Image (cartoon, rainbow, N blue to C red; front, side):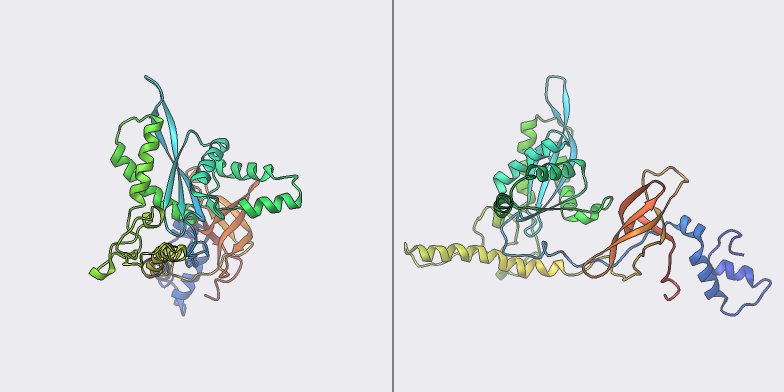
Length: 367
């Protein structure tokens, strides 16, 4: 009866009760509809899981700015390179995972060689980070491969000295999962809005674009982070520029201090300024990182051998890519949010938000 139109639970139960009276018919109809492959294909309800805890890099205070960073490209941006000639340049955003400060650079193209030059400029200005998070863009993957090949063949002593001095851990997010690098994606949106308001439809030269990007970075770094002050004694709001520029504000101790040339007292003064920022960060910013505003429902973990449909935005209309889960990647809390799917002739690593389970192996009967 359900196959005749693939109706809902109430419609299926009503059609059956025209001829038969079955006890607990709604429970049976619900089970039949839940296991129907065609209904799962048509509804397109992708999998979801409860939001995971923040990674350690996001909640590690008392670290230098950009010690834990994420990077992302945005654009293209049309620039004027001649009298009647234009080109496409790209913006590169580096975001500090702790202070939420940003650093903007200009890239001529999306090649790995160009991104290595951008990376060197970032290292020269902000220092060597210990951790970099990025998506699976070809320029990022190629740069990571080039840097890894540069140190092949080194002795253990040379490699140890290099890593101790410049060691950086590079982590890639799951393909087709931009929300895994949401720290950079959210700030890219802010920078795009600022550029659109500043540039509009004008064509800038490459150096003018570089100047505009630096101004935009300074404006975005001046934004409030954490809760806004609602008491006169709270002082001004906390922003990333407080730590990057070291400008004094009401949140920084103003004195009076003892007028002495003792270097020990001056060292204590500098440390007091830095500690004041992190005390404000722990009071105003950290409590806002803990609550989960979405993905609050704990669901069944997808399992190996589950038959799924890939939610591919490039798929042909009316055609679904069937696959089978061959590997799962549970997080620190045991919840699976990334899987490897095998389809016809290839394998994909995808987040669970890009798959629809149409035939689970087990686990649904108990729920």
